[in-house]
Every structure is written in structure tokens, then in C-alpha cells.
Image (cartoon, rainbow, N blue to C red; front, side, top):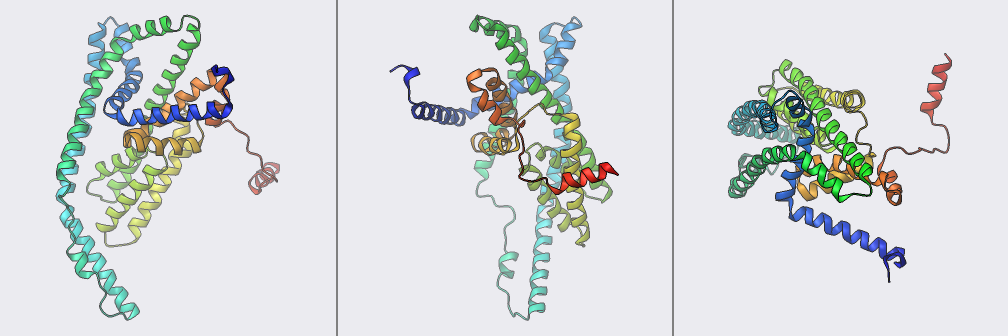
Length: 364
């Protein structure tokens, strides 16, 4: 039986098995693939800088090296400041834990007085809570060493990918002798997607960090730089990241202040920053380069997180955008590209009240 004679059910089953096998291989090979994908993405993002140096008569190796040195100095400075504040925050954890215990005990006593309940169980349990568990210390050290190893490999990947860029182009031309233009167009479009996404998200991260940092500084948060960057970085994980980061920051504000008002204001400010980022900053800075719909984005985050952890949550969004570009260029797969995209009609049974209000406002 030739592949052309396969039943549609068989083809669907083969496709699903292939996807499952691919995801399994990605999970098993995460130690190799995660730094490689990060290296590819950063190579596309840093290519304009190294290419500009190369066009100004710098040798390619020196141009790439200077680019990596400049970026590394900037990154090392940020990491140093973050680690410094993180160490100080960790040193404050016992004190913060004591404050939380006192507040919980006070609330339990207040509930007891209000409701007339005598002897609420749990006060001793809160007081004996261990705030710095050390059972998984070995696993934590191992994971930290593994992460540092991966981070150390990424610059090597970036250097080699940029240095051998002509070699990879020549390989693509040899491997696709009948459709050179289509292959090169796909690579070019994919590169534009990666570059626009990474550079755009870097700008968005900077703007969100500045806005959050100014607010945290004005209300007197001790580690305002750390929390501002934490909010901005977690914002790279759509929907999920901002919820987690906001809850943790609001909890810290609650524990370090004596009023309910400031935590509530902090929550409203973070929510306002998120609305501003989603509706104004990201559309202006990033645009719609990764043209996938919200449902696909959520699935990409969940699948990526399950396979590659936090790196997968960030990397799978542009990866899905690249897959969509490939689907759009292959006639038989164009329906699947349409399924991934965000260009779809919204059909409603009746005209909704928002459109009616807009029409009435326009007539005025």
C-alpha cells in the first residue's frame, strides 16, 4: 500500500504518533536542545550588531566576540545587582516569616473574638513553621549547577552559529536545489519573527521594569529593583507569569506594611501596568510578528512548560510562529497554518451592545 492509498484515519494516527515522538524526544534531549534553541534565537537577535561590525571591516570572529562581550558585560551587571538584592532578601526571610506568623496569629485571635470561638487550633502549628526547608538542598544545588552549565554553553552556540552563518545558507541551498527561493524565504521570515520577537520583548521588559520600579521606589519597597525586574521577566510568560509575580509582590507588600490599603493599591497598579502593556506597549513595540491566536499561545505555554520548564514557556511561542510560517508556505498544510493564526472572523448572532454604543457615539 503506497502512502497515497492510506486511509485518512491512518494518516491522522501517523501524524499524532509523529508529534508525540517529537515531543518525547524534545523532552529527553532538553539538556542539548534548550541551550541550542536559545543560542539560535540570540544569534538571530545579535546578528544585526555583529553584522554591522563586520561591515565596518572587523574580522568576523572579532565582531562576534565584541558583540558577546558587550552583551555579557551588560548582563553580568544586571545579574550582579539582582544577586546582591536577592542575597539580602534571603537574609530577611526569617524576619518576614516571623511577621507572617504574627499577622496570622493576630487574625486568628480576631476571628476568635468576633465569633466567640474558644481555642482555635493551629496557632502552635503556625509558630513552629519552618520557613527555610533544607530537605531538597542537594537537588537544588544540582539543578543550579545544571542551569549554570546550560547558560555557559549558550554563548558558544551563539558564536558558532554566527560564525558559520554562510555555511548554513550554503547547506540549505544544496539541500533544496529545486526550491531555493522558498527555503530561503522561509528562513528569512523565520529570522525576522525571531529577531522582532526577542528585541521587541526586550524593549517591553525594560519598559515594564521601569514603570514597576518607579512605583516600588515611590512606596518605599526595600528591594524595588529586584521586584521590578521580577515582574518584567515573569511578564514574558503570558497570562500565567503576571498572575504569579503579582501575587508574590503583593504578599511581600502586605507583610512589610501595616495597612491593607497599600497592598490593594499595589495590585491595582500592577493590573494597570499589565493593561497598558497588553493594549498599548506590546502592540506598538512588538506588533503582530508572532501571529498566533490566544488559544494556541496558552497551549504553547503549557506544552512548553511541561517539556522544557520555564524556558519552554518562553521559547514555544516564537517556535509556534515559525511553524505557522512553514505551514503557510506548504499548500497541503495551509489549513493548519490558518488554525494557528489570529486572522479569523468572529460571527455573532446579533449586534452586541459595544458596537451599538460605538455607532451612537459616532453619530454624535
